[in-house]
Length: 117
Image (cartoon, rainbow, N blue to C red; front, top):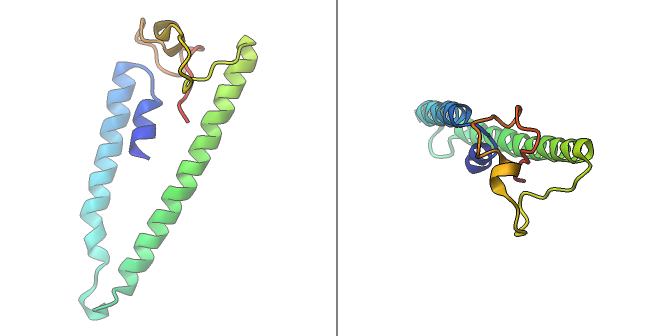
């Protein structure tokens, strides 16, 4: 989940900011997670188990929804430009033209940007 977020952001500043926010969120989760383990629940730690399962379920739903959203965005951009660009194909394409590496444009600004699924 962490890698798909970082690879689907265009523009240096935006990519750096998104990576930093995700890192801080990950650290906050790692700091607060151990507080779900209560000593009176030993050895099963029911609260911790429920918290971990809820977190995993939320992450699973979030990554499925993110994939669907990015797929819809790719289809929308393909239909607007009347092309079929698959960013995951091994075909020889000009990556600076289609991914936006020539200019420092974000994924929202560059109509040729396609999200990796």
